[in-house]
Image 1 (cartoon, rainbow, N blue to C red):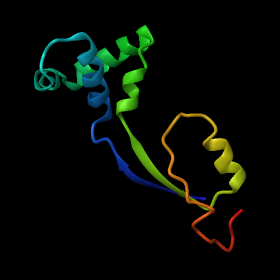
Image 2: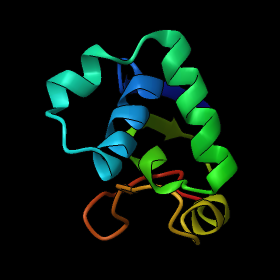
Image 3: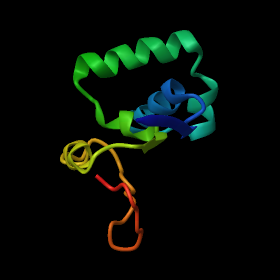
Length: 99
């Protein structure tokens, strides 16, 4: 199996904190972002965790390429909606060693 990180959110903690703060503030996004020092971001993320407010986590993203896995692995990893998936089509792609 080969896993490659293709792309990611540059500052995931700050992105998550800003997205969550938008839920509770009438300030402009620039104002919210400017006020998020690393210390304030960490403290706010801890509060989010304590409150069980997990949905802002979805604003951070990581895109991986995963190659050389079995069809069984693919079925299991895509079984629950914990991520967004783009899967190589067995209909349109002819592979000699497709498992």
